[in-house]
Image 1: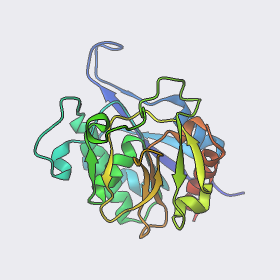
Image 2 (image 1 turned 90 degrees about the horizontal axis):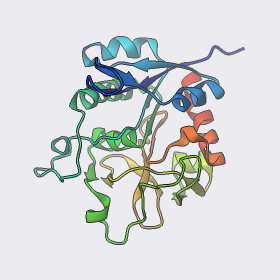
Image 3 (image 1 turned 180 degrees about the horizontal axis):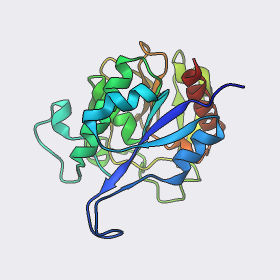
Image 4 (image 1 turned 90 degrees about the vertical axis):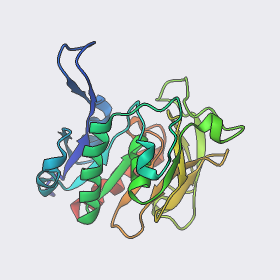
Length: 236
């Protein structure tokens, strides 16, 4: 029996106040449940960039999770910041250290929602800071229905690693006001009907895929296939 690979998941963070009078971390439960369901062991990664390499030494794979915040526009060369942009600088610094460290090791990486956007930036790409202002006639990418329901479909592009995993079309859930503008040295692998980039990958890596939706909800059969492929790569 194969040993379960150890998968690090990045945490969200909030300052003192609200739920706790002290600063606190958070991670939605279905992130870890999906890892366990498909054969992995999930561990949470605090925002500690100075020890990113120590964590990576112990991991077999990395998942960069999403959250209700944005990547600092200065990281991809934008001088002005849209009014809707909200930053969590400590989280971004820590996630970038983990992401770059994992990629330097050719460690399997899965970027989810904001994690996909950060992957694009790490690959030298750029972001649309606010879809409604940047893309006229765009779909509603911040869906108001349950995340256990699809918001729209995406086309998976032929010739990509993701296509080999999921096939040509998926129904996905999305909750984002930003999107990848350019993929840098990455390759776009999924596109929404309005042209918004919904996924990208780095073909130079064994497994390095980012998706704009939330596969941990397992809305589409392709979500389960994506987790299986990621965890299989973590066994290699």
